[in-house]
Length: 313
Length: 169
Image 1: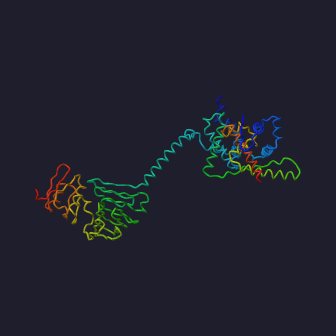
Image 2 (image 1 turned 60 degrees about the vertical axis):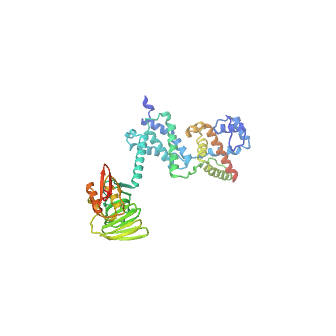
Image 3 (image 1 turned 90 degrees about the vertical axis):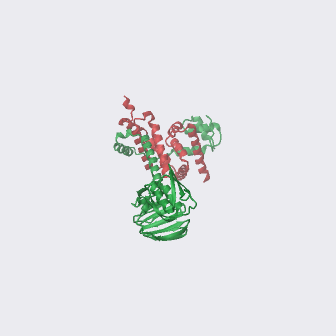
C-alpha cells in the first residue's frame, strides 16, 4: 500500500512506516528509522504528546439512568408506529396544511350566470345580493379588518357597521361604513344608488358623497346624473329590472342577462331612450313591456329574439 | 437461546451499554468538546437502539449506535449552527521533572491543545481516536463509515496542520 501524504515530505517507505507506527504496528527497527529521521521528529513528538492527553470521565451510571427513565416513560406500543410511518403521516399532513393555507389565502370568488341571482353573507354578516352575470371576489383572511372586494357586474350591498367597506370596480371605488347600496358596473357604465347610510364614490380623480335616497350615473368616466331616488331597495332584487332614461341597448343587454337568449335588433335608431321596467319571470311579458312604449315589435325563435320597428312590419 | 441475541432483552441491552457507551461518548466528545452535549447524544442513541431493538442484531448494534449518534450530532449542528468547540483536553503531568522542563512542557502542551482545536472536525476526530483512544485505522474507518485510506489522509493532514501551527509561531 503506497500512500502519498499531503503536506508531508514524500518518502515512500517512511510514510508507510509512519502510519504503521501511528497504528502501533511498527517493528522496533522501523521505529528506530523513523526516530532517527530529522524530518519526522516533529511529527513523532506531536503524536506522542497528543497520546498523553486525557478527556473527561464518562459518567456511565448517570447516563444509564437518563436512558432508563426515558425508556420507562414510553410504552412498547411505540414500536407499532415506527418513525418512517410517522414521518409519512407528518409529510402528508404538512402538504395538506400547506395546501389549505395556500388556498385559504387566495381570494374567494362568487359568480352568477345568465338568469341567475345569488345572495350570500360575508364573514362580517354583511349581505350581498348579486344580479345575473356578475362576479365578486374577496379575501376571507383578515376580512374583519380589511373589508375590500372587487365587483364586476351588479350587486346590492347591505353592509354591517364596522371597518371601512370598499367595493372596487374598474370604473371606480365605492366606500361605506355601514349602509345599504346598489352598485352597477358594466362596460363603461357605473351606477350607484344609496338606500341607507352614506356612500363615498371615487372615480378618476373625483370623490362624490352619496347619502341615502340618492343615486348617480357615471358613463365613460363622466358624471351624467346625480339625483334622488324614492326606492328603498333595488328593484331587480324582487325580480324586475327598472330603467330611468337609459339607451335601448342598455335595456336589451340586461334582458340578455336575465334570460338565456340572444337579442338582435334591426332598428333604424338604436339610441332611443327607455324609461320603464320588465319582469324577470315572463319573457313575452318582458318583451312587451320594452317594445310597446317604443312602438317596436319582436319575434322569438328558440333562443333568439329579434326586435323590429313597428312600421316595417 | 435466541433471547441472548435479542437487544429487547434487558440483560443484552445493558451489556451493550457497558461495552460501548464509553466509546460512543468519547467519539462525540472529540467532535464537540462538550460533556453535556455528548451525554445527551449518547443517551438519545441508546434510547433509539432500545426503540428499534427488534430490528437491530447484536452484531450491528455498534455501527447502529455510531451512525445514529453521528447523524444526531450533524442535525444539531445543522439546526443550531453551533460553533464547534474544540475538545478540551487535560494534559497528564505524570512525571516529576525540573521546573524548567515542566514549564516548557506545559507551554508546548498548551500550544498543542490550541492547535488541535483548530483542526477540522473530521481530522480531529480521527486523530484523537487514534492517539488518545489508541484505535487502529481499521476501527476508526468502521466508526466513521469511511475507508482506511480516508483515515490515513485525515491523519496525515492533521499532523501536517499541527506541525504548521508550531512552525508559524
